[in-house]
Length: 198
Image (cartoon, rainbow, N blue to C red; front, side):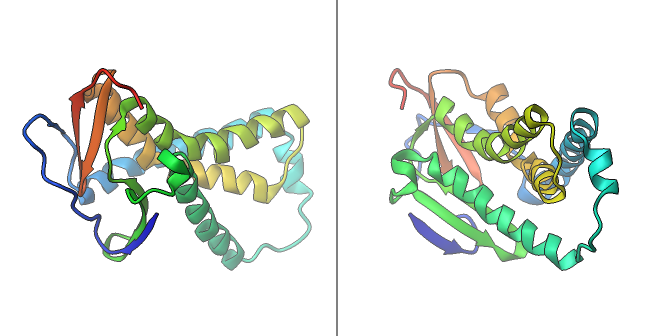
């Protein structure tokens, strides 16, 4: 595992067998995923209100929550979100191809795998933070019929953060066939057919 500050690093050149995955430039991509994030946020908040005692829980809050508390919680959430991505890399992220980085000019915290990886593994890596931080806790709250403001905030905020992951899953599902391998080169992805699934 490596830590990196700055742009997503280049990897080795392709040998002609790899096909590029069409993906918008990062600035345009960030604008495109924003509505997805808002939809995710609204959907999770709606599910909390409908299926848990959230309304009663909100009215019963008797302490003042400082905005700085929510900010620190969000920063911690972003870090945990990226580490969950990394845990699902090959070798649990303890590989020379696993990179956790921060791109200051884009305000982007990221976790990437720079080696070859199967399409299904790639989709699992992208989806796990959304499932682990937003979906599973919400299901547990519904089953247990309870509400906690911090618990709800984390699941809803993560749903917004996961918009980028969901958009990339959609891109991969639309452009990359099953039984394929995916490889990253800087901001772009490349794929090729493979009979071996990792």
